[in-house]
Length: 424
Ligand SMILES: *Cc1c(COP(=O)(O)O)cnc(C)c1O
Image (tube, rainbow, N blue to C red; front, side, top):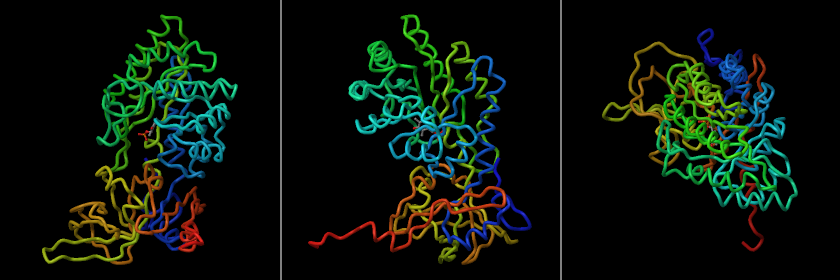
């Protein structure tokens, strides 16, 4: 469910007409709805409420890489969410948004010693270690710092899942996590190391997962590992179940059955008395933003094909080019008329800069505003300045208030970042 709807024949974000934002900020621009972000955070918390006796209250650590604007993070922090981060930059964003260190998880397959030292110094909730070598490096870093970080081992359960091969992370050939037997040995080896406090296991098997089966199997692996380690006298007080729940990109009902998900979690790990962490990204943010764009022109080819050229491109929204992802495209002021197939493209000089082929769309003209829905996760965070197109700005709407929370750089800003050396 989201808060982008037609009102008096014009598409709004909550109480604000998208046309108002386009006229003030220009296009392309991402527009987030604070009410939608809050609603998704609440929906997840509510789904777990009936299981409080068995599961306690999970920490919901929003995956910052999905939508990392500080104001977006601040809305979620105010709803009580923590942050799942994969770089020092993301940790700094979470802190700037008011997420306390004890609600920040540090994940990722390639943390540098400097990043590990930064995390240890802050006393984050936990550092999720993804390899034996990384555990050795972290122990050395922590020993030097004289602080004992809370650490979880990210397990690769050999169960991959997700909406596309490029967003599957838990399969045998994927680069993420430690294979089960090695993870057990790692836990045994470092479980009594005075430099580290091993607090549990973690997994994250993929993204845009729309069936519970693979998640259930992965959580079963974590539960069995927990029992094994406990039988050997090791403490396993926490499990981090990762993110990955999918959303509906067409229509507006979430496909992720949250009540079933929570019930499945209670079935698989409910008896263990562990403190849980969840790391949703897409589930919270995807349907909380649109990418607003303007039609530059409509070209009719000799073969009758219609090509809709927008002022948004793959550098602003990469998902269709990268993952063949589908985003619905809706007019901001719909016209009457028969829907005809259009190829929807941006101005970037790449064939991959194609948002959709043969998409049925009602008549559109140069100057019309359109919105890609479901653009809030892995949208603005993946944007670049390819083709020297200034980085796409972001706007946050809350009721009838709105603000540009990331400004579009001017061409002067863009060029000022590239000082020429005086010998050139
Ligand atoms: C990307 C990521 C997430 C979030 O995934 P979603 O599919 O957006 O929920 C969670 N945890 C880790 C470790 C990740 O890398």
